[in-house]
Image 1 (cartoon, rainbow, N blue to C red):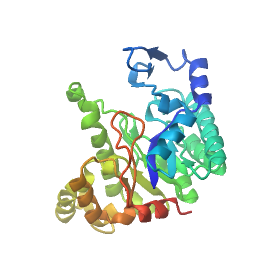
Image 2 (image 1 turned 90 degrees about the vertical axis):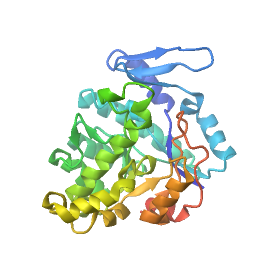
Image 3 (image 1 turned 30 degrees about the vertical axis):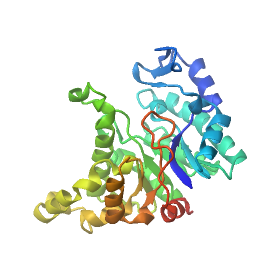
Length: 312
């Protein structure tokens, strides 16, 4: 069984953060005796540094205990560092990508890995991706946009051109939504996270980019956000409004099948709907391990999607 949605922080990355703690405004907070320290970068998105995030042997042991035979490891979104100058972002990306490449290569039967890139400088991001894939990584994990700029913006063209050339997996993974209406009851995570994916994926679909860059394998976190479940509305807009249809070569429903989706949904009926909508070959097991809201172990029986996504 594969798991396409896991996260890890290599020791070299933790060392880099400690060495650059003033530059990235890193802080470690102990909230309670029952939990590990929380790490915050630039006073945002603090998360618990669970041992499974940082202990390679424990991570591999936990994976084996639940029957995951091969995990695809991603950097964590809190360390994308898009808010900082691109030299800093690229510096950490290089450290992170080399560490994951070394770890996955020494455990090739158990692990593959995705890179992090300098999305705040798309030309640098293209170089980061090219260098990472030369090291053996399978693609990159990126956020759903940058400072309100969506991924279809022409500023990101160098990155998408390189991703298309490399036939890379590009895993779109949101950070917490910063909509001021969602400041309570964990709503930035509960609905804000899938909402950010929804916006990004809808933009990519309607922009025509899926036709422009057909070799990029775009994986959407958390079952694609809300997009697959409102695709009927998208189709109706396609029928009614040229602003929706003018960049497309087929109905939005058909473009759903050009993405890949993980199974981090926690609901069997929802997952069954996704299967009916896009087909099993476009769905891969995922867990979001070891974050609090992880579907652990991941859903099984999606070998076709796993094989097609990992295929060179």
